[in-house]
Amino acid sequence: MNQYVFQNHMKTILGKLYPDKDALQILDRVIRTIERHQDHEIILEKRKQYGDRISLSEDDAILITYPDTLCATGEKPLRTLHRFLKTYVKSAVTCVHILPFFPSSSDAGFSVIDYSTVAPEFGDWDDIQAIGRDYRLMADLVMNHVSSRSAWFQGYLNGDERYRDYFLSFDAPVDISEVFRPRNGTSQIHGQEDVGFWTTYGDIALRNRFE
Image (cartoon, rainbow, N blue to C red; front, side, top):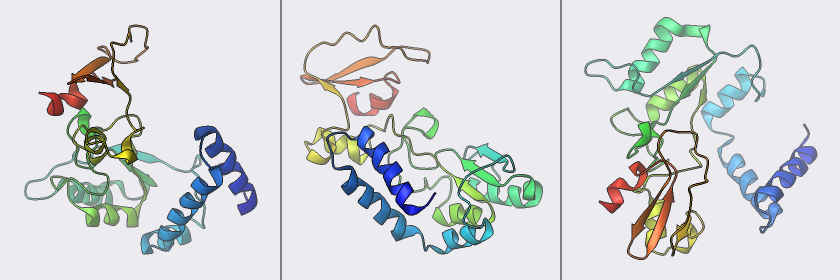
């Protein structure tokens, strides 16, 4: 896909996702973000190794793991994982998908507090980069929920305009009995003063904030 076709394709997608925004401005921000990171040494190594091939195919085998699936006394789990991969897995897989390794407050790591930090109990960014040098690396961006302790939700509670549209809030009772949720338990409305917050994951996500 050449650059012109790619940009038009992305413009169409962004226009559908953000109909009230300027898709070209959003695309420009995306491209600038990509350009800012594309010359990182690990990215350059991977581009050379895979001949700039960015898609997955039937030739790829992906290992999915929590950051602390493997543990050893006196060693951070991410370092243990890397050592295990190099010793036993070797080239049997081409990609490692590490489930959320960021600081979190619940939901097995998926209630993320801060995407810019590796949870210290797992290791640090050097450990992530070390694995990334030997394998294609995949990580999670959890878009459908966030920790009540995150800067986004705290900013929302404090009236920061940047986060105004990040959360659904209700100033009156809302009937959500017909909302389909493919999990055990039910969606809940949590109140704080005269405002309610809808959580699709029960009370876990907001427990720390409203107790």
